[in-house]
Length: 276
Length: 187
Image (cartoon, rainbow over all chains, first blue to last red; front, side):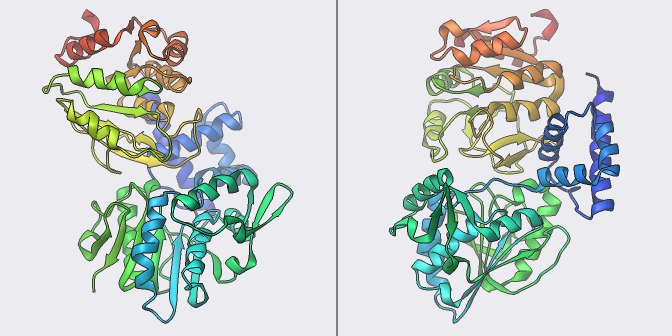
């Protein structure tokens, strides 16, 4: 493999992202390149394409293929109560703050298949806050959003989620929150009631509500630094003064312009409070 | 560097031997469970002359540092030599996965990369090491007969042609020589 191969690959990847943007309106151009490359190469292997040039043509001409690629690029794997320590901290440090408001608005940005939104819904319900809370759960992938709305998870997954829930300090029987049906668990309507699922693209869309709490965990890791900065600005503009921002276990505000605008409510679990 | 079962003691040995002035940055995936805390990294750091840490997202790779992938994330390297994380599904049942790290490192560093596969019980790292070699990098594999778990290095050795199948002491000697600037051709 020589240098020309590499720069050709780079150029083709760029072209493909450019086509996706211009033809379909989804902007992946400022995503982490290593991540995009990996996903595109995976799709190439799965669809048994001979080269990136072939893929470029297919993205241009074959809408079904392009749609599959879009799914590849935007899907993330998430779990309920992932990072038990974070949810414990949410209960102990964030809930008391939320309780001081007469009504609460929560925004899950990049909610994917909804596991995190359901997790927070459970905590809100247990803490007696659910009835005065609206949870906005948004993603730009409509397919995964529809799945999230259904709230159906396999029994295998529910087993893992039950353990996660318990590790995070949950004391109720986890089965209180879903009904079982032939190898699946369906999240109860009482949990879904106050969740508003909406299509929103962090890269291209703007502020849609003023909220008390923003959760965006392990979504920004896929964006390059400039895009992270842009999205952090969006979160900042969406939060009330004193509002709370929650990031993923290995994410930070350190390299963004917003760093000085927040205090660290819980440094270890990446929970930040917007300064007044 | 990719490590799995038996890795903790292998890494302990390596970092008790590598000297303070070792400059080549080392990036490691050690297979750990999803809920593993990083205390073992702090312990490793205590007996090491080199600084060992978990990288931050977007952090730049610096000479003389050792970086260990955090639990439950895949670690990738960008062309601009910064770290990226991913929570994609497990690869070879692992997250972090050695293949994921090695494949992105091969793209970023090409022939300026050394891939090391040590003790372990899965075949994570085999594909990745192959990619490193295909991109012009160097492969070093722990001699399976000296490894606590021979499966991973054996699997790597079957897939990759390399002159460097060595016990841990041999690996550290070689790395030190490479660092001192001995060119590849004269080994």
